[in-house]
Image (tube, rainbow over all chains, first blue to last red; front, side, top):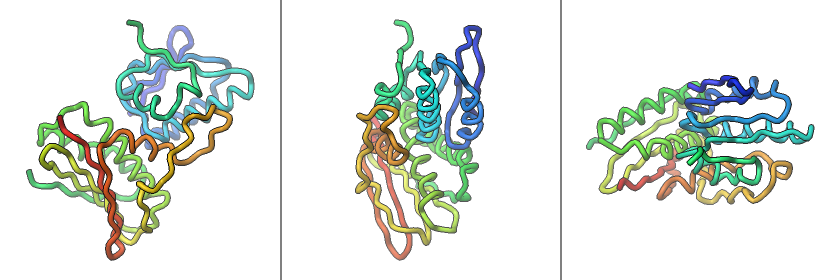
Length: 98
Length: 135
């Protein structure tokens, strides 16, 4: 199950599993996002290609308005998946603090 | 260890049950947790592709086998169209967001997360098998 929350600094927190069965719910949430926002992935354990597609569509929409998502605390398998997807060319991506 | 097979309705809502089936096999076969995400990713990609493009009408058969030094996972679609993902071109992951178009990214990543892929199409049965080395 994917959990979507907004943190104390207005960051978007995605945790759990972002698979195809969760994509529609995430799409609905992210379609309402405005402004440049930080997305914290520290507790995201899994993301599938449909999850990547939802993030990419959001980034494209925001960039058309001069805004963007920044992905932070990217680690483990999620980091590998984003790397294989070439998402470092799509998002500003930050690993967890050392 | 005996292979395990289970059929799942061809709908996205089957995915949690597919993941549970894989995890239960991992537990019984004492396969390390570090392999779960790559296997989940590959199986989800194959499963959702069969739903969208496979053309079959029957349930999708998932089979898990522990072989010497590796795990084999097969997805079989009865009555579907032949499609060998090994022949799919790589996605253009060098492009920026505005230049990207949908399609191909999941298989591109899948190929990098598994250690081997096999495919056969026999008598209307389309079977893709992915292999993951177990260290």
